[in-house]
Length: 233
Image (cartoon, rainbow, N blue to C red; front, side):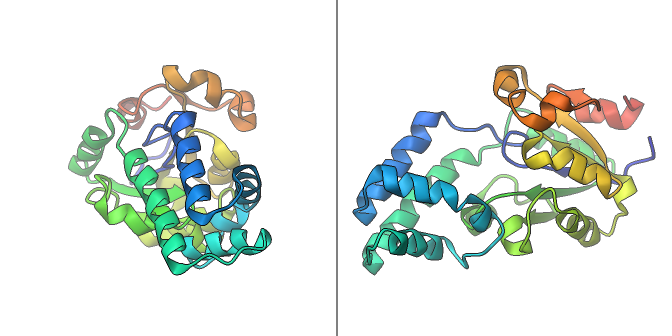
């Protein structure tokens, strides 16, 4: 393995744990209530817009909610949209808590002179509150899919992260949980990809298509990134 100069992380399932499903469900129900939309129809249309939201088709969180309301023949008031956005931002503020070992790992990487980046498939909520999170002081160049206009595994989003860091892909280690075929996508541009699969999320991670087929290196804890940098795999 070449000497690495940067580590680029995925976000959800890598640097942060997913919240319990019931927490997300409560938030969805609260949003539907705020917009006076039938829950089942709202949830179905919202889920169907995932790729559009991730790739930045909608200019904002507000725009995504207005789209869903139009699909259901409703015209929300500005106050209703504002409340729906408040609920969405609140659930993500609870969600964006560093996984155990993340902050310590960032400190180790910085002490070694390595650059730290991020590539995340997400919607506009995440970049909107990013500066409030514990990640903001450490991750130099976060690339969020709605701002990039494309999402993983498109090669362009990985290259954008490398370009912003000023590091060649061959000198970047990519860490992710295998969502959206992100590991193969990173490899195709020249990065070295590592699957993270924590013991407490192993069952859900291994249900995804890419982790099931993954033949590359696997770690269980973020602290193991240091071992890979030191000794390879």
